[in-house]
Length: 446
Image 1: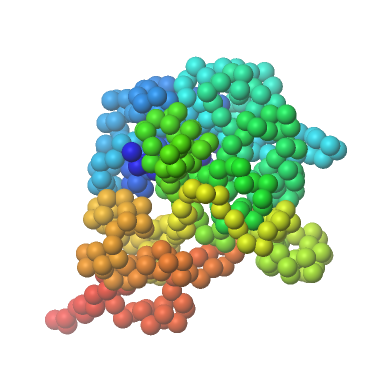
Image 2: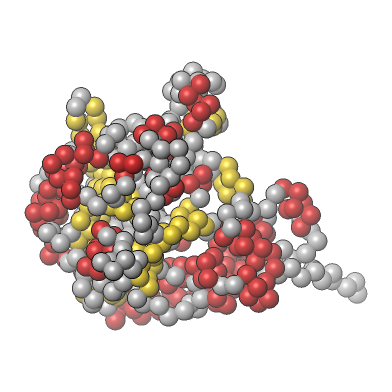
């Protein structure tokens, strides 16, 4: 079965998350986006785990679906917002741990994602972690626990579970982060390194960047949204072609091709990495951003204030890279770089992505084409033009061909990706309904 999975999200119990990040809303948005499998996030939080146990029931091995009582809330949410294609909605138990600890005379801050196939495994892991630190104050608990020791706990308490280092290049909290990470995976996980088989690229990097580093050749690269609100689901995700259950998905992540060479992890959906918050170097307080080469000439010092800049993902990749061009292993997943549909509509309409205008057209697109991913990936350009909007069709065509304009993010500031040049926007402005391509009617005077 072909299915899309976004495996790293957060619930309403994580800090700086939307209160709408409850189970029915997450399921509804997964359907809108075109996602078949969604990580639950935050299973270490006792209240969230309790809600998951009340709302979900096991189905395919290691996957969960909504119980009938929750499905009514789910259906109500969908009917009030938008009609989607009827894809199955499944969950897999996941949690992110923020490990802050000292190793080799340096404070390390590494985020890791845990995957388990059942509630019993989650409860065993939680019981052990609760003896180490506070797992009740945040859906993503901060623990003084070495990443290697966290992996050991998972292997002991959930033998069918697995661990994936999260957003591995972000400066402050990641495996290879410039501020507190390691230069080699083996330095982080030591004798248990062989149990790591996949890495999460994060919003500020993409597979092409990661494949400049030969030491990562043996690892599968996966992509997830790390969303803090339901509407951000699937800004990054994974596409599988395998049996529809946890164990088959895990096997596909471990080995993207089966014994006969057939792809089981067929693709990843990516942010354009420049849109991520830490792609370039810079100092947000001073509004200064630069590429790695300019930063190197400045010795990483902000020219505005004389303080050290936050060294971004691209600089860190270049620092560890031992290739000039990326080398992809045989059978590597395809890569689809996309711009979220609301952002595309926002640019065309010249209003904010959270505006009523964008919301109205977003709903109409989903009703016509079934899901956001259908619009961005699958519906033909001609169909988009004929059945909705020539301008939207042109925008989506440019996104698919990677004909976009990029302004890189830095030091916690999101970048921007656009499809139309400023002079094109000026030509469009005021001359037509930019989303339908139809000339605006002028009200007759009476």
